[in-house]
Length: 332
Ligand code: EPU
Image (cartoon, rainbow, N blue to C red; front, side, top):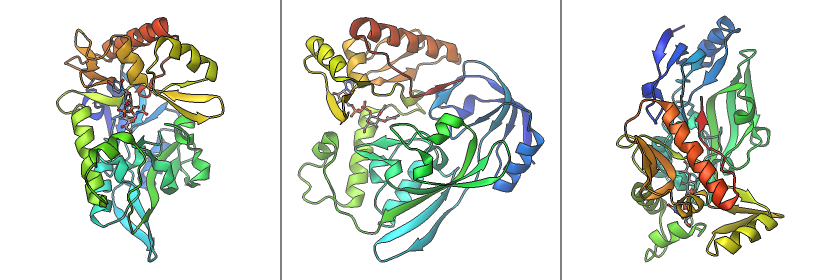
């Protein structure tokens, strides 16, 4: 059992804020994790992936668990499909790159999303018309309360937009994720940005789609190693018909997508930009010049400054447009 005390968390969150964990562990197997959970049963606990979707505003007075289970293996295959398992600590984009290099399709639209495989189901990562839930068939996890192992089917994961059972309960540590991928590939138009990038390519291959997505993301999103950030900071809000109609009177070019009965998803980035907050900087925190939805850290180690800037954006967008922006990023 490898346990550390008073561990600095700055390397473990992509905003690079400073805070310590009273107890910290990075178990490499489910058995080691179960032992740790038994030993520290009374402690408050937090599960950390690669730390790309959270930051700290204060020290953590409990046990932080950073799963370190590795390995990628093909579980089974037919002529058309492959079932592939990846350990929670595998780097997400390296895994996607591996699948693409083998000709396994289904995850290519999720190229270059920072983070670990184990974090992918937690917030049901999504981009360019694909969500990871479309490809997950099973999630292996350990129950934080009992240390027992548990398998979740896709349905049991209760996936929704940037949401799952793992986010709601925080009661399970994901140890591995099992995906079903296709052995063939046919490009389908799903997202305008991607189609534009692929214009002129008659029938894009799997590798060409991955490359196109890497190009779009590199252009639009800041590199966390240069400008620390946590990707999209807010969720895209969902409006009712009435809210949408009212807002469109103010903002005629508001992007809206019908996502259910009386439900219209709009763009948080658009609202932030219209509120005058694209590329705005206060002290050491700001929004990215090429994408209003990304909060970037210009050099503070204090998470409270980031949280303060977040509140300022929320207040301004609410004041101007009556929409409450909800953070997608977790704040501790
Ligand atoms: N827009 C602006 N100003 C900006 C940026 C965008 O007005 O500065 C508007 C444009 O109208 C644009 C629309 O917002 O067409 C959508 O922008 P984008 O395609 O970049 O997508 P997004 O809704 O801002 C979502 C995900 C991203 C994902 C992209 C691509 C959420 C919260 N974010 O962003 O995910 O990469 O779609 O599919 O759903 C993440 O979760 O960390 C993340 C980066």
